[in-house]
Length: 176
Ligand code: NI
Image (cartoon, rainbow, N blue to C red; front, side):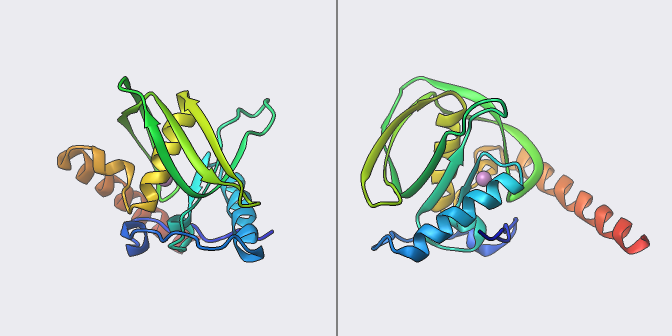
């Protein structure tokens, strides 16, 4: 398996719509495994195709805690087919908006339908962190980021903070 490059804001690929995967071949399976490895290596709980520069409807998620058995979802063409009316707020982050966090309101429960690596249709009903991750990752496939749910004031503040930190880190690296 290979660790892939994770694209960060403001890379345009994060703002584009990912395309339906027509055929689950060896290459797609390899990409899904590489995405999973990349997600673990970066301590993420989810990763979408756009985030590794691929405009394909692919998502990997594992929200199990460190002491739990892995709960791996490797999804092709995922779709949310049910949403609870009830919503809840949770602090979210994103590997493409590194080390910035904000509260986002989402549906408390969702049911996702997808194709697994063998091309079999699967459904999964989720609540808690997993429900959040599913909604967050499927948004990526539409070119939507969690910061889009914030007020423009909050979003700009967050992005400025990220830019400032990047500059500072670049300077520190130069000085080394
Ligand atoms: Ni994300």
